[in-house]
Image (cartoon, rainbow, N blue to C red; front, side, top):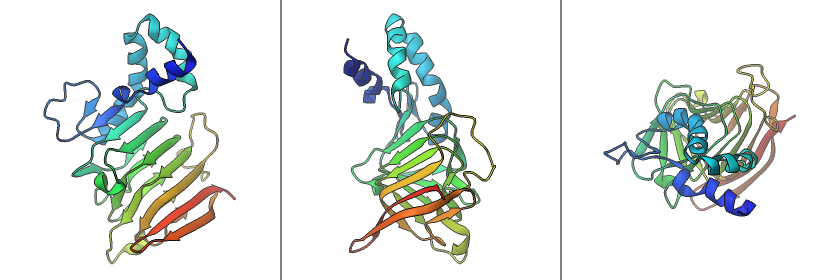
Length: 230
């Protein structure tokens, strides 16, 4: 079987994990009621897949190791309603995808009193998602490469706006150093709406905001920028 065919099998949407609160029976493999459970189980999916496929799994293993995101690494979050998140630590490469046609159809809400909705200690990608926070931050970047593409990051308006940031990065500060292999610590933001908060990005480590581009639409601003080594 060709390399491209193996890659297709490894990345097929049927092998993605799904977060769907509307499902009544969670006995279906790979379906979870919340993001935290899906993230915690993601670490074991690749091993289960290889074992379950027997000889094919053994043959597939070398190709799985070379893919940027492998089976169990992609989590599809169902559109409609709100998904609650509180300081969910992501310690392995994951891709979180909103299930709607537009980012505002899939909303992740940071619970009040939490430092962040999602905390990243590994290379990860977010796409087609809305993440909202009232206090604290939407996304907390500790280490690894974080890619944010076609998302909406919103800090709700309140008298303590100066305590809110859509993105906070502590990479390079010595807090929660990553033991995982990565291509370096960085954040890449593209075609993303950022609203509210004291400022779009707060850094307290070795990274700095770079290469900022903004497109002014009629009702919002779209941002492209990198947060990388100074």
